[in-house]
Length: 90
Image 1: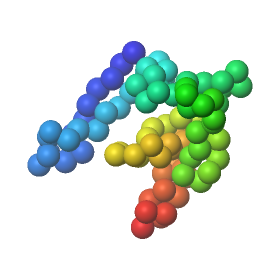
Image 2 (image 1 turned 90 degrees about the vertical axis):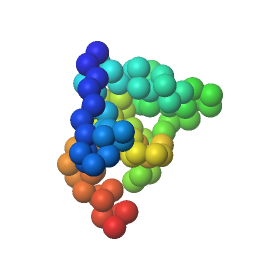
Image 3 (image 1 turned 90 degrees about the horizontal axis):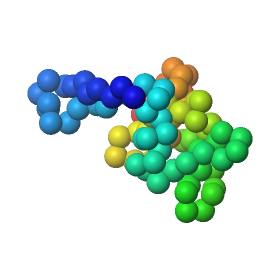
């Protein structure tokens, strides 16, 4: 598992972005009390309910790209998803 930090803004080095590779996804989910079901969808460990993206779509581990900072808003790992989130937050 490779995890590294990169500073989004040199003025605020105490607030780095965390970047991880594919092998870290299960570890990241574990830290958020999440898991995956038999079909590969990310679920809440406590309830077994599938998590939703900000577009209210179920999310597979293979599509997991990250979580919006300071929230549990799940983001797919593609540019279109990021653009839609930016427009939504406007």
